[in-house]
Structures are given as structure tokens and as C-alpha cells.
Image (cartoon, rainbow, N blue to C red):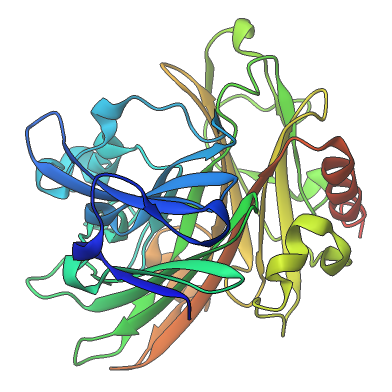
Length: 370
């Protein structure tokens, strides 16, 4: 261990870390005047914010000063106290829909109409500030903290230990979460991430690259069907209704040989294989990708819409986003006993290197027809 910093040790000016990296804290007020605390970390190439009041979600990402995450207005960065998750049949989650990487769950989610919020409460659960720390060694920087999950009851039923790991001068971060049942009864755990990677690089259109045949993408919404579900329309085409497709991805081989992933490969759980998904512009000059163990998130969603903003998301998830009663009936629900823990991992990265982009696309597309 080279360096260990607690949150109270950080200042509003840069604290130098090894290899040209740095970290600092930022205290801002949301539009209603409520204070939000952020940790800003640069690994020397990638800079990202961790929003402590928002479940330690990643707010924004910049690669060499170029924004590579959702270009979302700050008015959506709200303190949990200013969001009514029960609003409009459980869709109040949308009022604070800001982070580039928003956590889903870990309690029941995706179930409006059953007294639950659309995406769970993790993204609106403040971390314990005294638990937040940054450590650095010769290879990685780690931001970690403890998040008691807000939940639907007076006391949290779950507690999460969140670790965000990044290698020096890397264009990726590895999110690792350990979710514990801190209640006195058995609980269903149902989690995932809603990930927005692209900034303005998809203004002229692009596409998803997924390890599944297009015919196996299930359109979940009432929007008109598309000739090509993988297509991302150019913004000049005008508003597009929200379309969500759910699917079961195949494992993707050969990821250990790809340069951006090598730094993280040995950290990943691999018992049931890894899968990868990507979003890219039409010129193959920019891509955002998500790689994770299938034992953590064996299902996926993509969500896309052009409205007041452009939303093109990748959503690794544990179960199909059906009503929880249906998930339990179908036998998909995962149960945690009191004090039992479950670990998930998700590697999130971006690239401007065409060779890297095409190599990852080739590895993924080989599974489109598996």
C-alpha cells in the first residue's frame, strides 16, 4: 500500500496520487439547496466522479478532458431527500436521473404497480461519509465506502460495500459491490446497473454490438417495432420513443487478450464466463463497453430514446425486469439469508482507438449467431 486517504483527509484541491493520478472532494448544492458530496478521481487518463449521497454511483466520466458519459444537466443531480420515489406509480426515480452509472436494486425493482419504485432505492441511498476512503498501490486506485440501502421500510434491509477500482492511465473502471442482508429475515436481492456511455459522440448515429442474435431481443415497450433494433438514430432524425429490449447474452471468449481489459482480467469472477456489450458510433471512432461475469448479471437490457435528451443505455441485470411476483413465480428470484452476502462486478470502459474497438466488436459479434 502506497497511500490511504479517508474522506476527511481530502480537500477541494488536488491530492496527488502515484503515476500522475489525483483525487479531491467536491461539495455542491442541488437545485433545492441540499448538499451533495462527491469524490473526483483521475487515474492519469480517466477522470470520474463518485456521488456519495447517491449510493456511490458514478456521476460523470472524462477521458483526457473529453466527456465520455451522458451529457445530462446538473438540475437532475438531486439529493435523495428531494426525490419522491413513490411519485407517479413508482417512477419518481426519473426526477433525479443523472448518473452515468446508476445502481439498480438491490431490493425489488422494475415493478411499478406492486408498491415499488421503478429502479429500486440503491441509487438514492447516501453512503456513510466516515466509511469512504481512497487507497492506492503500484497498480490500482480504489474508492470504497459503505451504503446502507434506503429500502422500503424504516430500517435498511440491505447494506452495500462499494468498491470502484481503476488502473493507472486506464480508460476503464471496475465496480464491485458486496450486498449483505442486514435484516432478520430472508430477502430477495435483485440488482444491476443503468449505464450511459457516449456523450456527444453518437449525435450522427451509431449502433449496439451485443452477444445475442437480434431475433432474440424482446421489445418490452409499446413503441413501434424497428427494422434494426441495434440501430441508434442520428439526433437530426428527431424525437424517438423509448424502446427497451431484454435478452440473455452469450459468454464472450478471448477477452483476456484485449489490451484495455488485461489490467482487470485477473480481478474478475469467471466461473460462469464473461460477457461483453458495446455501444459505438457509425465511424467506429468511439465506443463504450461493459464487461461482467455472467454469474453476477446473467441478463441484459438496452434502453434508447431521443426526447429532451438522448438516452442510449446498457443495463446488465440479475433478472428479467418483470413484476417481482412474476420473477418469483418463474423461479428467477435470488434469496439472501440474514447476514448472507452476494458480490457483483461490472467493468465499464471507453475507447477512441479504432483497433481496440474493432477487436472487441469482433469478439462480441461472434456470439450473435451462437
